[in-house]
Image (spheres, rainbow, N blue to C red):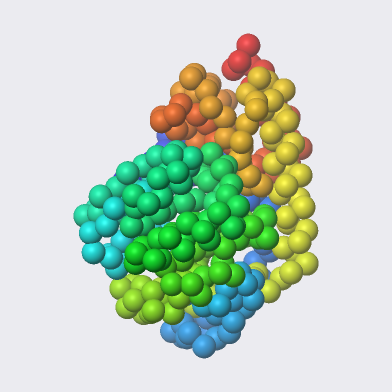
Length: 327
């Protein structure tokens, strides 16, 4: 199993600090989650049905011609490499490590490169995998540049696969609206922006033939009835979404400023996290953990990712802890 954020139980055991006393900044999950309503008993008692209206709501939210609900974008990350014969796959690095892991495990030839090198040599790949905005580096790309690369890939039967798990704060930059084009596949997650990571839910936006092939690979009932009920409400809640985007952007900017105050800037990131390159990332990670603050540590390159803080007390706590650790 690869390393991920959110291992709070493990940190509590390792550092001897009770779970309730931790400030978990190790994920990019919004601390301001969508308010979950009461779930009707029928959602628990009946098998999920595809024609319950969720797909229509998701198509409107993502502005996508076609969508497939999946058990988190992770399910699609693992299954999509199985739909191709052996291919040359270029993947953004540093980035979400599950992408490279899945393509290698399926027998493909994988090369991981920084974004600039990856895009400069796009003709080398049969499949190009990007994360937009990137996790953890925050890199962003112009839609016209990505569509031009997609055209070149598609001309030789290739794919452009874009993971937009952190795109919801800036939906105007999404490629979902273009996914009726063959070979353009976009992954979306509801766990980060809506704060619903435990639901393990996401969507794939792509041309119908690839969604049908993926559906056959994943099998029936990829998303539970209660999750479908909640998502149908959340994806349709436009006033909450608009307010959340403003709030997340504001808090992310404030987090960046706090990190810069302690000499950790300039940082990069997006509306859901900030990322700091530090040669002493490991010692900083441990120093904060000893104070009950969990960050996401990366080894290559040495760096820390900070998720958003939920309230004023959390900002003050991180401020004090950084001053002590960096003293």
